[in-house]
Length: 369
Image (cartoon, rainbow, N blue to C red; front, side):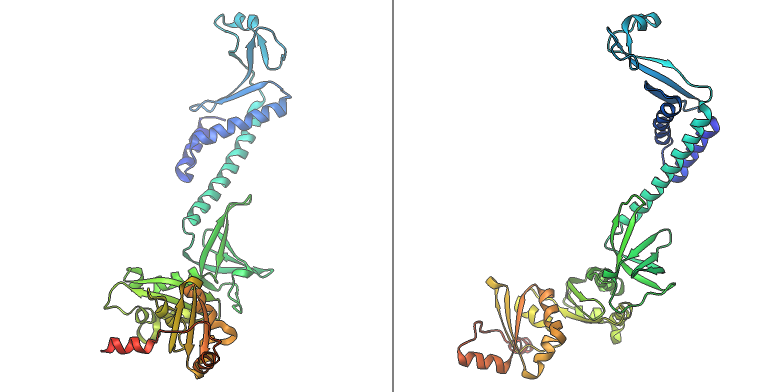
């Protein structure tokens, strides 16, 4: 190695951000192993690379002792003082043992270390770049599909969309471009592994933040998001400005804002409901599009009893219970839905455990007055 090598390391420091001193220390450590391997040494050695010229020096090291028991790593005080009378027991004695043929071995070792450190640095840069973007939306292009896993090109790196994070029924073709939720970045022996999702509720939330300026500006707040990916989703919103309708802001003129998000999520049906600090009102809103005629809240059980018109019972429950299930997840309340007839019959028979005392129609009437 020579001065040109030192200059090359300094150039790498500027381009890749790897400090030259760190590389030189790594090379020195590697050269110790290379020396012992190639020259059969069992001695303690130290390798020093001149930071200006690039010259390499190898020194064996021995501990100065009164009585030598391990000649490979110890030297007697008497012998050490023959070189320098200032030596005392416990000091470290050094002597240069640089082999003439060590230059070729050193060059190969240095190249290997630098290549490895560059790979590590690039992996760390990729990790740092994407780890800071966790829980954000990221754009990517489908590269290939293998064993139901989809590999995504992010530009400077590759990411993975596993089967469990794919929207059911969505087909991923090479060259197709999608928006993804950056789920996790893992460190692995082969470099960072970037995991994406198309099913995470965070994707829906981030899409609304992009599509709706009022959310981005903080005027409208997303309180809760639930999804059954590819089928149906509910999102609860509130406004911090009484003059701004949070639901209307999210729907957009002629429904364009929400439709853009529906198109991005493979036609997933999205219902936007108004959040309310009163759980009675919130639960009633969450069951949209069904109309609630009466409801009761039982906080100790975190339970809500809801009554709907007979003709809307199936709408309130939804196909295979989907609407009721999503409403319960959205609000955090267990919800039991009965039709007006079912409720009346249960009251008459005395089998109704939870009676209701809230009627949304009364709320609307009082607000109109």
